[in-house]
Length: 88
View 1 (cartoon, rainbow, N blue to C red):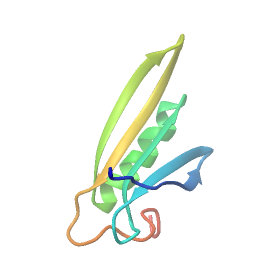
View 2 (cartoon, rainbow, N blue to C red):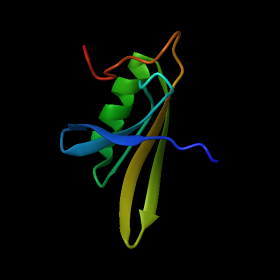
View 3 (cartoon, helix red, strand yellow):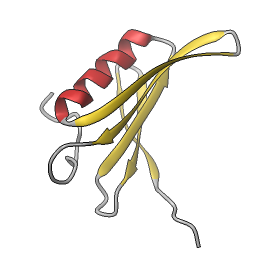
View 4 (cartoon, rainbow, N blue to C red):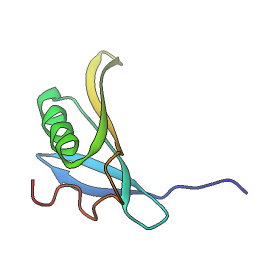
């Protein structure tokens, strides 16, 4: 039997849908999003980095369009917060 992670739609910020994969405790340990507007992705990624997530940002050209994405993994002390965007 393989390991399955539960991906959920966490929230929408400035029109960008942020997805999360939760850890064993049900807290959002990995987050990602993709959008055509690089400034929106950068703003969300910056917020997560300030919160304690390690964030990878990437620009991808695909099907004649440029898309921007981030992938964030919890890197802070202790468990990840219940809401990564609370208080920011």
